[in-house]
Length: 383
Image (cartoon, rainbow, N blue to C red):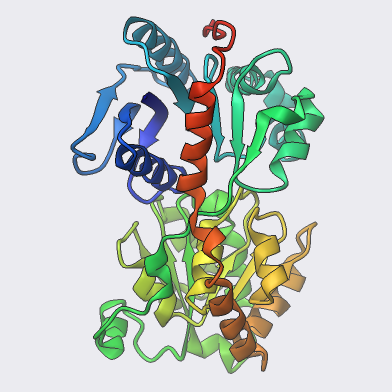
């Protein structure tokens, strides 16, 4: 079987990007041929057995590039057919969509004003989402969180049988403390100095992940927590505006910014708490990674994986609608509560569930099933 995946931009630390490579490796392990269409590939060379096709889709704006990307892929796939075309981003003509992003129609109506819906950007993304989820196309949808299906159905009346839920797919190395590590030297390397407690914020896309909320809560910590707590911010994004915000809040000396890095397992075991006060988070794999590492977490209820944290009692879930004062108090509780050891133990116990590591296995089971099915009607071609 030959499977083609489509992704606008690859960089090694993004959630969808990491999921893509899990799917690619599982497909290759089962003997399938894999092609990946990418507009950008900002990483070392990919898997040797993977065919990488770079899509020449230039444009001044994202929505222009993405429209050209979809048209080019459709033409190339007609000339070089595959058994399944799987989108990691929403676009017309897909056999399967991996729903790593939240519902655009919902965000446009709840997080943007009416004028936003007059922009070309809105028209593009609304159209591409509609072409995946409208009721009269055959695109199968792999969902990664329970809240996704009802939201999409509300906007598009998508038939229920097209949705296929996936379990999480945590990397098992997150559960094991790195052997032979020198924590004192590591703390010096990270610039932590005499900080008694360390908060960890991980996520590419600082605005979406709610870094402003996290910095505000750090600045609001009471003494003695305030002067003894540092925050590590790790992610592929431009930190400039948040450095300025930290300075305005008087916490710049206690906030340390890093680009995406490979030592996340070590950071999870070094830190005292994870914070993810996201404005929009489809899943939030780092929540589960923190749990199995025994790291208590404070996350907002709109994170797709927040229910796992609540059910396992491995930290705190801040209710929606978000309230900054409440979150500030919850951060102090996360760091000082006498429940911390229980949270740690509960998170590690959660890691014993084999189902939380099976995302790629279950997803490829679905792909094989879809490929064996009777061919669907002709794909909808990009306009």
